[in-house]
Every structure is written in C-alpha cells, then in structure tokens.
Amino acid sequence: MNLLELSAGDTAWVLASAALVLLMTPALAFFYGGMVRAKSVLNMLMMSIITMAVVGVLWILVGFSMAFGDSIGGVVGNPLTFAGLSSLMSPDAMVGTIPTMVFAGFQCAFAIIAVALVSGAVADRMKFSAWIVFAAVWALLVYFPAAHWVFAFDDSVSATGGFIANTIGAIDFAGGTAIHINAGAAALALCVVLGPRLGWGRTPMRPHNLTLVMLGAGLLWFGWFGFNGGSALAANGTAGVAWVNTLAGAAAAMIGWLVVERLRDGHATTLGAASGIVAGLVGITPACAAVSPLGALAIGLLAGVGCAFLIGLKNKLGYDDSLDVVGVHLGGGLIGTLAIGFLADPASPTAAAGILYGGGFAVMWAQFLGAAAVLAYSFVVTFAIAKVLDVTIGIRVSETAETAGIDNAEHAETGYDLSHVAYSSHSVRQTIVVPVREEESVA
Image (cartoon, rainbow, N blue to C red):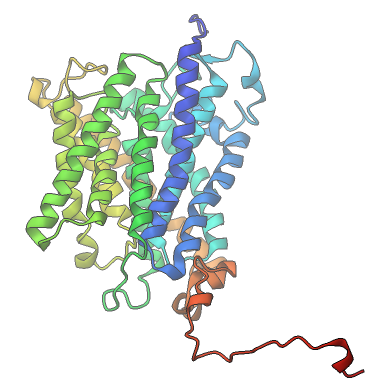
C-alpha cells in the first residue's frame, strides 16, 4: 500500500517527461527518414509513426499489465491484472508520489519507441502490412516481457516483479537492456531473415536528406532528457544527475565519433555527428543514475568511438542493417550496460560500486547476465516471429517494388513531388489558350 502523498511537482515532471519521450518517436522517424533514399522516405516515416497506434492500443489493453502486473514466475506480468487500465483511475493507485496512470502513460511512450527502433534495420524492403503485424506480435512476445524483467520491481506497481530487476539485480535506469539491446538484437534477427537490399554492397545507398537526419538527432537528444530524467519518477536530485549525465554522454560520443571519422576517412560528417549523438544517448541510458558526470563522459566517448567501428561489422559479417540499428543500439546498449560494472560510483543515486571504486566483479556479473538474457531472448523469439510471418503472409516487397520505390508500392505516394521542375520548357508541348468571342464560336 502506498503511504506517500501525491506530489504535484513530481506528477508534472513525469507528465512532461512522458510527452518528451513520445516526441522521440516522430524524431526517430525524421532521423531514419533522412537516412534512406528519397524513394523510401514515406515508408520509413510511417514505420515509426504506426507504432504509436499499434503499441498504444496494445499497451492499454494488456501491455501495461504484462509489463507491471502480478508477476508470473518473474517472467511476465499477468495480462489481466490491469487490463484496460480502468483500475488505475482510482486516486489511491499510486507509484511513489505519482498516480499509477501517469506512470502507465510514461512507460507507454517507452514501449512505442522500443518497437519503432527496430524498423531502421529493414528499410527499403519490408512490407508495411508485415511490419504492422510484426510490431504487434513483437511487442506482445518480446518487449512487454522484457520490460517486466527489467523495470518491474517488487512492491512498486505490483507485489512481485521481474527476475532481472529483483533476482539478478542488474542496473538499468532507463532501458539500455529492455529497449536498446532488445531492439538491436531484434534488428539483427530481422536482417538475417529478410536478407539484404537489392544492390547492397554494389550500389551506393546514401542518405537522401541529411537536414532531416540532423533535425531528428536534435529532437531525439531533446526528448532523451525526459527519457532518462523522467525515469527518476520525481523532480529530485536523481533526475538532475540523470539529466546532466545524458548531456555529457551524448556530447562526448559526438566528439568521439567525429574524431574517428576524421582520422579514418579524412572528414568529420554531419551524419557522423548525428550518429554520435544517438550512440552516446544509447550508451548513457542504463548508466545515467549510476555514474558520475566524469563517468558519463567516459561512457559517451566509449560509445561514440566503439559504435563508429561496430557499424562496419555488417560489411564483414554480411547482414544488411540498413540504418545501423545493430551497431548503434545493440552495440551502444552493451557498452553502456557493461561499463556500469566498471564505472558505477557509490556516490551516485544507485549507490552501487563498480570495479574502479573497489566494488569487485559483482556488479559487472549482474550487468552481463542481464544483458545476455535480453539479447538471447530477443534474437531467438524475433527470428521465430519473422520466419513465421515470412512463410505465411510474406515480409518482403517484390523486386519490382523495391527497385521502383517502396513509397509508391506500399503507400501510393511520394515524399517529394518534383514534377513541376522535372521537365524543361523544350520537353513539353506548349499550349496557348486564346479567348474566343461568343460570336466567333461554332454552335
């Protein structure tokens, strides 16, 4: 039973944070949309935006209950505990100092973007209808259970919660495992089943609009302050530590990525800057309340440099991860999650001590087990979902549709109507209309 009084300040902060996190999905749509070719931009936008509808409905029906309902063996919440969310309208339903309904809304925004993240790996070639079905099934079978493992603490929303949070004791303040490692592992499985894009490795597939990419990255960084700071569930010092560390991680990662580009390729690019921002945000997410600001700078630098190299694995291993979801989210999530084992500061809000602070290997072991459990589960179950969908409804568009452009094939639209500038005056017939007086007209 919650003995704390409702805090208007905490409630307002979490509501604002929920809105910031929800903004991150359209921001992701811009980020991903600018990175694909012009003939695929609308499809890429829609793959992110449709998750707001699909996951939003599922979350209200059973998703929140599966994530935070009475635990069934520490594996998944009872789908009936809070089904429909009607029971959360009671003023007595609280999590800490905020209404449980506010907490449910905040966590819904997390669920939405977790699913949307996966879409970047399958750009240019997955049927939109198959993506909708995949998003629904993956949320039900993968994300909701993983969220229960990581975010459902005993005696928070329900009496019993998930095994990673309560038995293994891994630290994941805002979703490095449940969201980023989870989405990255799923992206890898989908890539394997779907196969590479036509011409991959032979035909240049450059981003068509880097302005959109940078806009998306900036909005993601803005929204991420709600993602991490809001996870404190209060307007307090923990939120402040998470906020500053979020800034530090992204800033250091952007510098790290750009230095790698400059030394390796001779140029520091806007795409590299945007990618570095996201890599740093991913890396600091699990650790934002467990390390000092100096530790956050270190994690950001590791994530920026590490992910800049990890994205090259797809060329060596032969999987076509279109927008580097595996390299940035799986790679960055692992870097941030495991770095906690070394850099966790006992003076931080989580009070855990990593190896650097004399805490031994206990924290590192817990971090490894938590990351491994989510990674393995997500990859195996996602692979099975994709295989079933492939042999039933089919998951890939035709070669003709892929070559001509998935926007036209799937949505009967184009992102940019340039028909009025596509022809010169010499390439079209010039027609001069001369008014005819009424008496000269022929009956």
